[in-house]
Length: 383
Ligand SMILES: *Cc1c(COP(=O)(O)O)cnc(C)c1O
Image 1 (cartoon, helix red, strand yellow):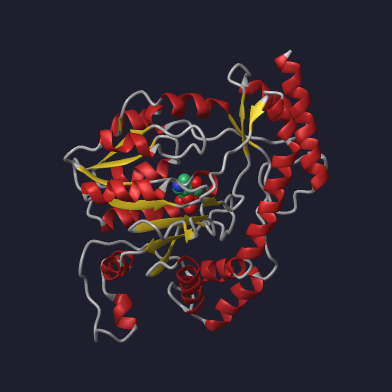
Image 2 (image 1 turned 135 degrees about the horizontal axis):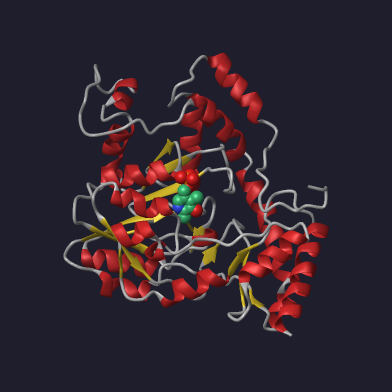
């Protein structure tokens, strides 16, 4: 690889991570829920307004915790998009429940709220809105549907750290929400995540499940004089070493988000002419959504072969990538889930989507090269 190669992702580090890890080492508190974890929890609670944040090993673990907490059982149904990461569905399947896949909106690629009610059955327990690219689902409509049918809402806000909807933080709008700190996300700790609990009635139980089914958390706060097995649970908390790393990122999360947004806007301007020529569609962000520059995607014109576009970009030392293979069309999705209808937009949009290189440090000159090369490829194919 020459120095001209532009990778799809380059994990960003602030430079303070190792100092904080060294501090955790000096503290000799290396297991979970020490001072760094508490700082991370406070930060997430203050920034989002959730009643309780609980760090987990990943967003996947946070979703698993949410599914345990809401007691999903065999035969229960949970509505979600098919256009999402497998963890959204696995959390439900692990409880013996059934993911019910609903089509997405053409503008945001998020769950189409107008199709949710028709997918509800007497077995439906919850809705899982996934905020793709850090752009919010239509939460007002989804909340209204959940209230009408007495359903829970778990937000998969893996991509939604510091993004908002009508001024409210993603992840803290539904009963429960989840963040990811995987190295491909905006704020990272290698692997990492958090559960966000908005419904304060669920906090004590969430703490118990996360601590091997014991009331260890209240024991350490001095609320009980011994801790004991209370309920089913697992070990879902990360060590202080991870939390220390994460703290270095959260401290600078606002700046990191602003810089990503600047890169996002630069792409958006540079690609306007290609959209005007009908060669691609740029992302659409509804006025109610304050996104976080998590990723920049384009939708190719339907007749353009995406595979060859990605190959030609790679020949030009640019790594662009597609995104989700819809879950309802995957072997696991067919085996464990149920599609509500044909999901035509999920199928067509997912086949046209390309994510462009997006990371802190990507220069304007590199973005210019990406958009110039992309424009040349698309013009040549449209001929
Ligand atoms: C990244 C992602 C996840 C999984 O996050 P991990 O922290 O890697 O477990 C889940 N859902 C969505 C929508 C994601 O983008």
